[in-house]
Image (cartoon, rainbow, N blue to C red; front, side, top):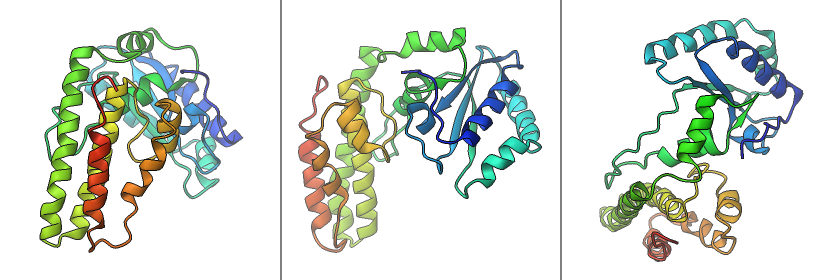
Length: 262
C-alpha cells in the first residue's frame, strides 16, 4: 500500500518525473499520486500513465481549474510528454486534480452504481506517491483506512444489495418484451452491483468493477474459489434464448450468500 510506483518503461518514468517536478512548485499541491496500474506494479508498455494531483484543503474549485488549465498549456510544449505519447497509440497521460473529498451517493435502485469506494481505493489505498506523502494525504489515510465507519458501511451494503436485486428482477420484464440486449445490459449492471456489495461486505476497497476482477477476487478478497463462478455469469451464447434468465438466477444465488459480515 502506497509504495513507490513501478513504471513499465523509461518513458513512463520520465513523464511521471516531469509531472512531479512541475506540481511540486505549486504551493496548493499536497501530493502527486500515481494511480491505477503503475501504482500497483501491473503496468505494461501500452498502459496509460494515470496521475492524481491532490491539492491542499480549502483550495477552491476555481483555483483547481486554474491549476488544470495552466498544466494543459505547459504539457503541450513538453518534448518528454510528446515522446511518451508517440511511443504507442494507446499511451495517454490521464491527470486529474483532486480535492480528497469523498461523498457517498444515495444508491437508488435502477440507477448506475456510484464510485465512492473505487475512488477511495484508487486514490488513497492503492495509490503511490511520487515523493514523500503530504500532510493532507496522511490525514486522508487516517480517515479512510482501513475502511470507513460501520454505520455508513451497513447503510451502503443494504442499498447496494437492493440495487442488485432490483436489476435482477427487471431482467425477466425485458426478456418478455424481447429487449434482449437491454436484458443483458441490466445483467451486467447487476453484476457490478454484486461486486460492489461483495466488497462492502468484506470491508475491502475495490480497484474497479469492470476490470482486474480476478486479481481483486483472488488477491484482495482472498476468495479464489469464488472467481470461477463469476465469468460464466456474463458468458451468454444466445441472447434470445433463456440463458440470460439462467445467468440472473446464478447471480441471485451468489448475492444471497452475502451477509454484512461476509
